[in-house]
Image (cartoon, rainbow, N blue to C red; front, side, top):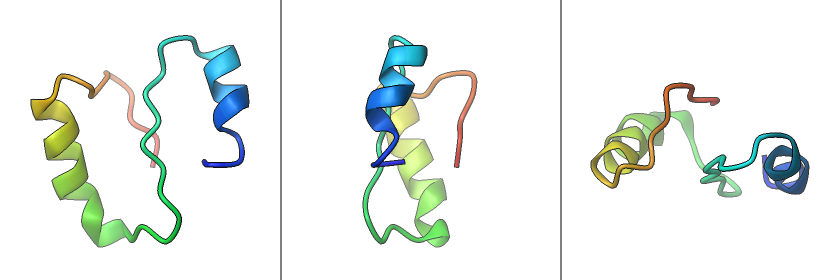
Length: 47
């Protein structure tokens, strides 16, 4: 995700990307909850 971030921003204006090198799948539920509370979670989530 980190490497394709510029392309995604170009093709999907307004996209929120929260990519981090080395993040593990077990961290996803907490991250998703946090993004939802901040109003940053869209209708589509790409993991």
